Image 1 (cartoon, rainbow, N blue to C red):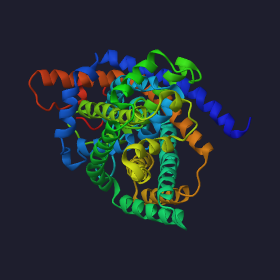
Image 2 (tube, helix red, strand yellow):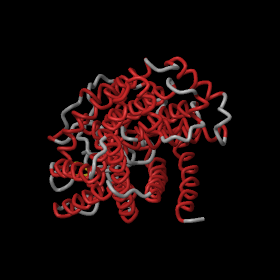
Image 3 (cartoon, rainbow, N blue to C red):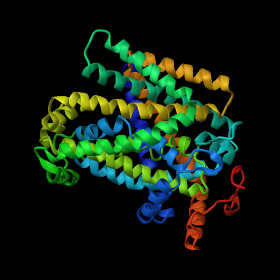
Length: 466
C-alpha cells in the first residue's frame, strides 16, 4: 500500500465515523430545538434579508450571509451531486435532502455558539469560530491553537489549491491557446490580490453583489436545461424516489453506498456540522446570536436547492443505468447534458460558472484564514504575510495539483467535524437557551430581540453581550 492508498483508506474510515457523529448531533439538535428548521422558516427569511445594517458599523447579517454562502456554494454544488449519483445512484440525492434537513438544526446551534463566544480585534471587528469557542468557553487555549492552525492550513492551502485547480482546468479547457495556463494563473492571482487588498470589507461587498446573482443564474440555467431534457423533470424526480427504494444493481455497496454518498456530498457542500461556517458567521454584528443562527440554517437549505438543480439536470438528461455505470468525469457529464440543450456554448457556460463558484469560495477561504490568524495575532504584518502566502498558493496551484493533498484536506475536514461535534455537545445547551430567549421575546411582541449573557445558565467566557 503506497502513501496515496494509505491516505484514502484513513480518509474513508474517518469519514464513516464523522458522518455518524454529524447525523447523531443533527438529530440531537433537531430534538432540542423542537424541529426549529420546520417551524421557523419565515423568521429565517426575515432576519436574513431584512437586517442589512450591523450594530456599531460592523458587517451586517446579510453581508456575512453572502460571504458564508460564497463558501457553501462552490464547485461542490456542480460536481458533488453528480459524484453522489455516480457512486450511490439517484437515491443518494434524497439522502442529501435528509442530511440537509438535519443539518439545518446543526448549523443553527454551531453558528449560535460561535456568536455567543465571539471576540473583537484591535480595530473593533468581530471574529470567532471553533478555535475561539474552545478557548473562551472551555478554557482550552492550546486546543484552540491547534484548531486555528488546522483551519488556516485547510483553507488557505488546501481549499484554495483545489479551487484554483478547478478554475485553471475549466479555463484552459474552454480557451485553448499557447501559454494559456500561465496567462490565467497570472490573471487569477492579480484579481485575488486586488480583492485581498481590500480586506474582509471588500470581500463582503463583492459577495453581497455576486453570490445571490450567481445562485439565481445557476438555478435559471438548470431550469432551462431541465425543461429541454430528454427525460424531463417528472422522470428525474421519480428516479430519485425509485432509487431510494430500489438501489440500481450497478451501485457497488448497495444501500450503504447510497446513504454514504448522499450524506457525504451533502456535508461537503453545505458544511453543516464541521464547524467551518461559524468562522464567518461570527463576524456578523447582530442583536441576537440566534438571529445569525436562523440565517445560517437557511443557508443550508439554499445550498441544497442549488445542488438539487444540478442533480435534476443530470437525471433529466441521461438514462439512469448508463449514468451510474459511467466512467466519465463529472464535469464532462455535465457538459454533455448542457450540450444537449444549449449546444456548443456548454463548455464555456460550465467554465464560467466554475470560475465564479470557485472564486467566491476562494474569497471566503481568505476570510476564514485571516479569522483564525487573529487567534494568534491581528497585527497588519501578520495579515500581510498570510495574504502573500495565499497568493503564492493561488499562483502555484494553477499549475500543480496533487491528489494526495486533496485527500489530506479531506482528512483535516473530518478532524474538524470531530472537534465541532465535541463543541456542539458541550456547548449546545447554551445555543438552546439563546434560542428560547429569542422565541420568548418574539412571543412577547419584540420585533428584533436583543441578547444579554444573563439569559445563560453559565455566561463564563461571554465577552461581547453585556
